[in-house]
Amino acid sequence: MIIGHRQPDTDCIASVIAYAAFRNHTEPGRFVAARCGELNAETCFALETFGMKPPAFIESVEPRIADIRIARISVTGDVPIVDVAALMDAHEIRNVPVTDDQGKLIGVVGEHGLSRAYVKRLKIGELAIKPFPLDTLARILSARVVVRATETLEGRVVIAIDTAEVARKKLTSKDIAVVGDNEPLQLAMIGSGIAAIIIADKALPGDEVIHQAQAKGVSLLTTDLDAFGVGMTINLSLPASMVMETDIPRLSLSDTIAHAKQVVFNSKFRSACIVEKDETLRGIVTRTSLLADVHKPLILVDHNEFTQAVEGIDSAEIIEIIDHHRLGAISTLKPVKFLNYPVGSTSTIITGKYREAGITPPPGIAGMLLAGILSDTLVLRMSTTTPEDHDAVGYLVPIAGIDCHAFGTKMLEKGMNLSDTTAEDLLLRDTKRYDLFEKKVIIAQVMVPSFKFPLEHKDEILMGLSRLRMQQGVDSYLGMFTCVVENGSALYIAAEGSLLKKLDLGDQPVRLGNMMSRKKDLLPWFGEKLRQI
Ligand SMILES: [Mn+2]
Image 1 (cartoon, rainbow, N blue to C red):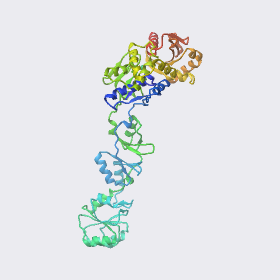
Image 2 (cartoon, rainbow, N blue to C red):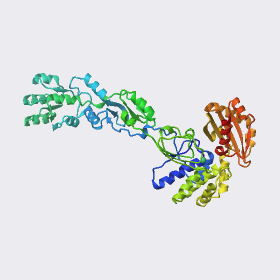
Image 3 (cartoon, rainbow, N blue to C red):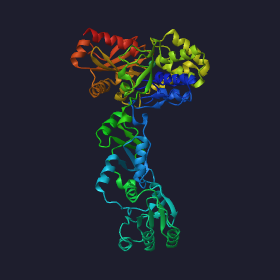
Image 4 (cartoon, rainbow, N blue to C red):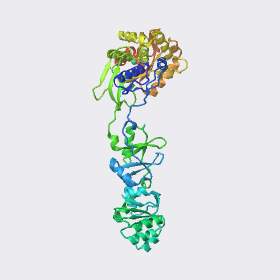
């Protein structure tokens, strides 16, 4: 994923789009353009002009359940638990989620529930729970269906060890008798009109028995298991819904791994089911599946400071940085490609990448790169503008096929729309956070057509700044109103009175001639002032 800073500007968005396209040129589909903030009016104008789609919005790169492998095993409530146990064994899992016919989670069969069910239920022969398919019964008993009189069974299972008369009294027409190699008893059972007869212990039914069973409509099965084995196996054929527990914790695909770990480690199941909002099951996570370390690989463009980066950056793996700002406090565990070049925009650097590789960017990409350069350099008028920026513009203009100055001016105007917002909103639009000499600083930059706006809205701006300073918990919040025509900025600053006094910035706005770049002009100037106090 290729991502820019918070509150993305046009250079940031253009760089992300263009660099993703550049990298996908050699490794198709591997790189995703992303952003971690809203698009501003200027960027929207550029995207529309060149018919480009904005990068995908990503709130945080903290790893989520959707980023790990989750087991997608489940059974419906009617599946006999002997089959569930086989699944548990085959997949080496301790819990199997149970769903209804619509795939919605209704519970889980786990080792814990199984053992509880069997400790409680020692009496064999309670098949009378639910209609049970004859074929399923045959399958679990490894039995052969000799006579098929019905498709489902729902009676009790009784092992016939009494005399025929006594056994007959115990059984109803729904019940199933388990008998051995005893033809008189077999015939007596069939004669009493029960639902099915299971002949155990490898005994072969005689012709008369088969004939009677057919005539009486009694299903006849034979199995190699002895009577005890039949009873035990039938006991294992309870449907999953009878044994399941329902209090397994639920998580969603968007939950963070950190949260999932907490839930799973605190649960007696040592796992949690992943469900949609409507309880549709997506899978199950266990302690083991959460142990694998997940780090999303990231390429950062147009910034290199943690304070400006997407949320969750600590848990990501930064693999490359392309920037044109001062070196910030980002540190990485592994070696990382770091291209920092002091030109007017990151888009200039990306343009250079295309040219070096001999790849001509498509017109839409060229247009966005142009927009990025023109935006960051205020149509090449900013003090940060370098010959490389001029050169890149000269290269991009014919590809994008537009009038660079007309487009640049119109785009900047779109970004300067001051009329329908409050001063506070303007001071939130384009901000950067810094840690300077143990002071937390936010600098907001507002581009203005003249100094009329900052002078006329002095009170509103000062109030907004001090409220934002409190709200953001920083030592100073600066509002830099930059006017290209006037070739300078008007600065307002909110800070403790004592700090303002030490900085000698009590008289506001401070007119800063020749200062138009936040990073190249204002930041070193303000940093120096803080260093000296
Ligand atoms: Mn930039």
